[in-house]
Image 1 (cartoon, rainbow, N blue to C red):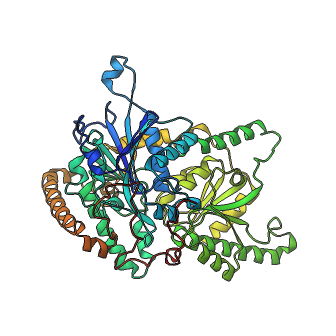
Image 2: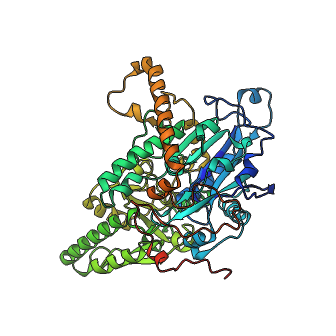
Image 3: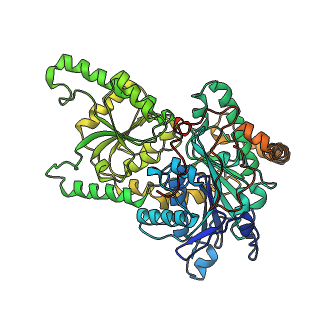
Length: 578
């Protein structure tokens, strides 16, 4: 089977296959007309582990934007392509294992948007340049060069949303030969403004959506949050019901998506992070008798995009309250308080739209956070820190938390559904109150993390995550699936006799999908409605040439936040070669 990965960050009309050949086409017709091999012939219920399946992964972001929806889909594509297909017939005949065919579909941004999104105002003149940079990064990160075909679709960076919106119909950019298994990373996001006459389920044999983002949490933090949350809840549910066969929730921090949803963490950690933890564990084993420390010279850090919704409110609160408790203990214990600490030293790595607001709030509240700017989590200076603090309540599954655990650090995070998977690891400490946070922080400052054993380390690997993904992609959902729990089964009142009424439920579901699909198509094929709803002007039709595409600056919809201050001031302009 062939897996196609589609993202929303960048898009190109053509494809780049690494490490064999590369090509790029400028219009969707060049890919949609490529039907010489035709669409793979599989049923929706066929085993995704069968040979010759093709996976197409579609996502909403792409490197060098270091965000979860760019990094994780790329790593997923690499490990899917590097794994092999196993079936009973080939085992009996002792045939050589067959590698999977994998494609990754990402957004291509015009240069004016690239300079807003990519670090250090980096930009690419051609999609092929970006594809090469992406494959070089993933090769260095995983230690092998995966054979992944990279496709691009046009996208716009929506400054009011802080994310990328597709331009035109993404499906048109995907050749027929790749339309087998579609893995939609953020399916709700990808389909908010989907304008194709046919949906994903009509064009692919199996469509699996992976929920990355807790949009309800973001909505409720805004003005009129309750109304926006209710609207987003219904919209996201409808988009997933219309356009996917099955939903995989990374954790139960996100909304319910009905009976076709299963909760499984299908993310892994790059081998480079695990190697850091392995070296630290080996060092601890060799120096067990001497009691030598593990090389941590600094205490606490936090790494995340600097926007309030990423947990900065919570971070400031817990650090401020801990510093108050330090001051009280110092009064009681004298100058020798908690190991002589005047305050909890916390370094913050990242940048973002709210950086100056967060800094100003720290100064107002006298919270001494040390902002270091954007830095890769594998940087040697970060390796010196012992404790990773992640108090965020908006995460679904925090990649940075998994990476910190893999590197052998302590992780202190909130008791929250998004952290349920990590809480099973010994070095992950969860808290439900400020008092618990203070106690856990004291313990972590005094002690050293325990080296992770091979069994625990294996659970964090992308190989294990890929296996969980293939199991979770089974359709329809098996009721004895041990890798995750379905939304309908975990709720109270689950009735096994409900199977008698499944034919009626299927008909009702089918009719509902047709009805809402017709309404959604009618709305999204109107340029005026797209502008009002926040889809952006000029996003209905794909540009003929991605390389020379130069759209106007982004303007939000009637219900969106105003554009960023940087855009208003004209700080992001396409001023030619620099």
